Image (cartoon, rainbow, N blue to C red; front, side, top):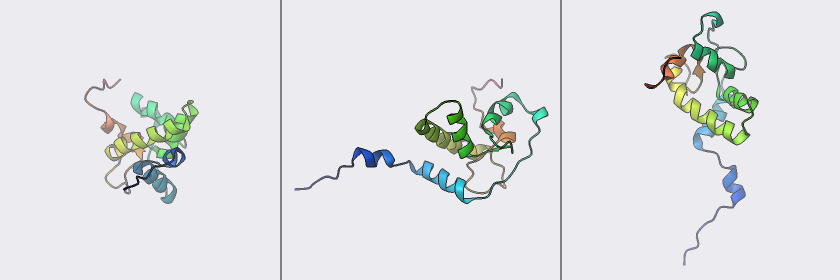
Length: 122
């Protein structure tokens, strides 16, 4: 007779998706680059996403996105998962060719590369 393993609800709630673990390891293990940011000539989209650029260096890190979501009143679990998803999707699209790997930071000056076909551009 085989006995199946059951996870306790406490153990299951402590598990994080692999992409979340990767993001947190990367954020705390690498140096931080800076990008040129010209606020006067920013598009509306760039101005919108710059809210998440907490240190105003032109690069949005996963931890800055997490802090931004918490700042607008989202709970910690939602903020963590959303930051992971957003950076997994937009990081590679907005990173310059010479950006260090893994390319999970969002570069504000390249945010237009993350737009999809149904975006209005407004």
